[in-house]
Picture 1 (cartoon, rainbow, N blue to C red):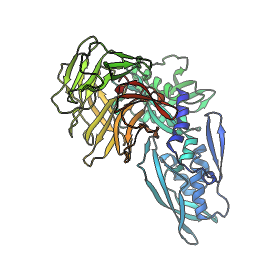
Picture 2 (tube, one colour):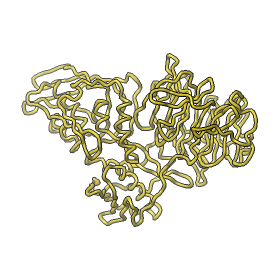
Picture 3 (cartoon, rainbow, N blue to C red):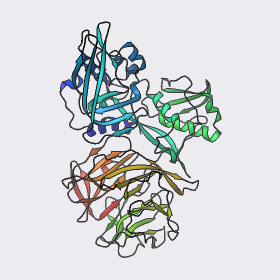
Picture 4 (cartoon, rainbow, N blue to C red):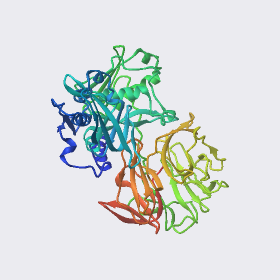
Length: 573
């Protein structure tokens, strides 16, 4: 797991920031060195030069923002003494395509104003949430400098930092902060945050954990940290492979089950850090437990969310509803006629952990469900056209009417004749007409594609609130738009963790899969002519595209090659 996140931090960001200038001015005034602890690069910036002009001081300050060592100590050298004390470097990070354009607006004998202009690609907030900006987003600010001891220094820098995508790829990494899924059979689910790796990273991870899950996810997950729990001494030191977490006395309010969960969360979150093998947790200085990689007294080992044991694709093939194991197509017994490649059915789905299926029939107006060992029977009908079904790990089939203002519907796989139940939408609604609704394999998140009244498409994720038996009750608030600027999204699926694959169509009609993240940058894969559907497995190489002429394609280098006849592929879930 740790290697996966390290690779994501370096490779995905580089891919997501294509087209960045590679001229030397991007790192002018800075040195870049390898950090053997992380496998990443560290930016070592220069401090201000004596006699530097206002524009040069601002440029140096912006470049130094990529170096978080010692609480951005070098960047603070470009500020006045007062501003250096109050500047909140970690309040936000704006990622821009290149070093901003700078121009001197005004200058007197004691004050100067410098204009900053750049194109932003993403923003990170204080909690490490990574949100992509719509294409063409501009960052324009005016920064005031004053003379201090004969040197120009920034008096009003504004909280946060501004760094280039190139420096972001060198210094930022994604870290999952773990919480437990709601409902039965809890699992640990990573709420991904982006931080620079330095001596404060362990502290930032624990603070994020104690502050709670992201607002959109919080209704669907559980934390073992009692309300008001915080770090007693403000930092999490790491020495000799051990991270020590000293909590305030509010942690004493945790019951035994909460305490075990909190220990599991801390262990899972902190051992993602390179070199952290053991986690010691204390409350007001008294050791609560020791949670190491080999287990420890009182440590709980909740499973982390994982891919289904049966990783075969489900699809509509020449012989009807079928599974594909990358070698051959295998028809699903008992599903009956009418599901052939040329029939009127579409968009099959398979349960993650059982031989249960759902499929759209009757030109998209009926969802039919096959319970394990049973026949394929109508489950949802009479509500107009429906979005493609999705089956969660708790045994519920999801769909929704495509009419505006409608909410998701669920029926149990074990009793498809049961009247469909409505899953309550958040108070602010879903933001438009539902086009797609896909449940994540952990059962806690719902990916939706909606079209608003103006025809624009939006991709968001909602947390799912369930009762103790796993029945879906309502949806929490949404994430930010995960595909800002997308012209159209034809299909969508989960990959693994917080990664998604979207089949986007641009203004010229070209279709291509796009790897997106709930918190993180997106990457566009090579275009696929005639693509109409997409399936996402455990990783990027498991993306399968379905074409309008009934072929399934997988990637081979930069090419897409046909591997089997079929349409509307989907992995379990």
